[in-house]
Amino acid sequence: MSFESLWASQSAIGRDPDTGGYRRGGWTPTEREATHWFTDQCAARNLTLESDGIGNLIAWWNPPQDPAFRPGIVTGSHLDSVIDGGAFDGPLGVVSALAAVDVLRAEGFVPSVPIGIGAFVEEEGSRFGMPCLGSRVAAGVLPPEKALGLTDRAGVTLAAALEEAGIDPAGVARSPLLERMGTFVELHVEQGRGLTAPVGVASSIWPHGRYRFTFRGEANHAGTTLMEDRHDPMLTYAMTALAANKQARLAGARATFGRLSVEPNGTNAVPSQVTAWLDARAADDATLQSLLAAITKQATERAERDGTTLDVVPESVSPVVDFPTGLRDRLVDVLDGAPVLPTGAGHDAGVFSAAGIPTAMLFVRNPTGISHSPAEFAEPDDCLAGVDALAAVLKDLAT
Image 1: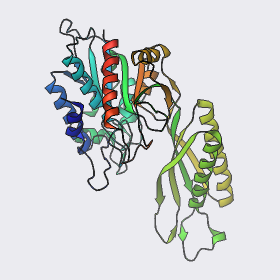
Image 2: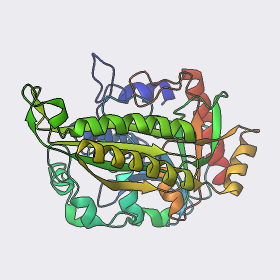
Image 3: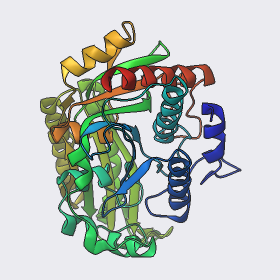
Image 4: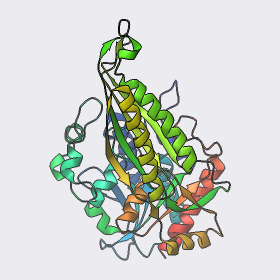
């Protein structure tokens, strides 16, 4: 099946016809529909499907002369999305992996080692707030008991969501799938404007973290409370958001408050509490820590002036990931000198690399630089170039 046909067969799943944005939160009906699409595609290719306790999947193309279950080359990505996300972040890597295997089979190529196509769950963390949730559990980075206790915005625990999806939460543990992952190569749409060629190779993933800022004050009447008598946590938060913007610009880093919860959330009431989630990223670990310290310092000083309080809790922190240069350079050679660039976006590839699995990434050009938005885009010709590049890499690694 051609890339175009594969892409079209899954592109409507979870897509809002009015906004064009996708909603495929982990273990929701739309994400499960996308997962079923994947398993059907694997069955149509007679691939051997394996799953772990949390729902990560790898479908294997095993060499006919060696049916033993031994480590191989895994590619793929994820099928979930951020809230109102774009079409390419995640699915492009899965669809391209299926298409690349089709290309190799059409050429008559027979791999010397198994080739696996992976679909990893809740990479975005849009439902349970933990990025790369499936790969973190698989790698043993996130303990099962902590993962199962995570809750979504409706208060549903991960354990309950798994049961609803027909998955026994008692089976959540470090994944046996990783024992067969000899090398991992993830293809992904580039999520900025750093790539000018159709396909590039990743050098590293910036360190990044998600931090929960809780500002507490005193609820009061919006109409009768004098401005000088207020202990308004919204003011403290507002200054903190501005401080984050300034400090990130000064450091050449990234800082974003993209999620907010207000109590009691009344139009005519001074809030008693504002909870805001900071996404912070930088080129190195020291800069990230310095950025967080600067934002927290300014927020704390402002809280003292406003008569409010502040608590900062890190929910997830990922250190810098430098992909192994030997594997990276091998991909560059296979692709005739493809450009090399870092990324500020997090990926399952970063988790697997940190777990000691030789890992590399391919990027497909994004002409707008927009991502996590319905406007996310990649040209059809660049997507086809990505499939050819991935097929060439798999052929080289599996020969």
